[in-house]
Image (cartoon, rainbow, N blue to C red; front, side, top):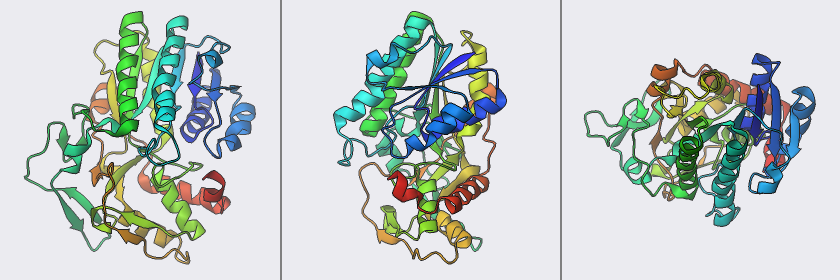
Length: 365
């Protein structure tokens, strides 16, 4: 088995390389990365030397960069600009975002067409429509045990595709979903059309918030890692939007927990009948946490941190949502998949890494 992993020196790509190498030492791994993400160059030696990946320095936006890649059995696409603020934050232009996340996908699909390779897209929870999620009826849940979060109001009507278990694959992907979300929705559609037209297997995995040690944390992407590192480094923090109390909720998944499903998807080959082409992969309710709860966890882990109470900024930003938990029942029913790493273990792993890398945020910003 020969697999091409794009974005191989990013956090997700590197995590998957380690897990694939552990589980499948005989697989041949080919990697592609343009090293545009700050800090990704630090993973080059471990990917290339320790994991034995045949590494190519190239950009998926450039079709010619893919021409020298060897034929592979599968493409695992982990390359993307992953920020929901991309194109509007002044750090990335809208054209850069679209060329990277959509045009890059087209180039990879053309590669799959030429080499009859299967394609697995790591998509995102941000493909789901913003207005109905922003308009969910929610209440504050607080307990003496430290529970402090938003939760859906019991007994109130919910949009189709949303339940107390989270947002299901049937939920609307109608705009607005952000420019970032739109590039991923369009990539999903094109991937499935290419697969149907040219007869190669395509799987779409909509991932929740991915987190773990070595992640290049940022407030707009990788929030769990960013928060823990910021506490460890004594940096100031801010609760933004939704009354400024940090009660907005996300779920959390370690990238290594993706591999059991990826194994099954690649093992199915062209036999895609009877299995859903699109599934949510996320931590779900059991692996969810609010920023306020995350702050409490960090304060216990780092009681001497000079980081004070996060600043409160109650104004909502255009793409912020109060409660995003993915319902993963479809993946469990179809594939027997469920997350394997509890959120406490993920946070502990991040904190242990932060102790070893006390200035990580300065390096990766």
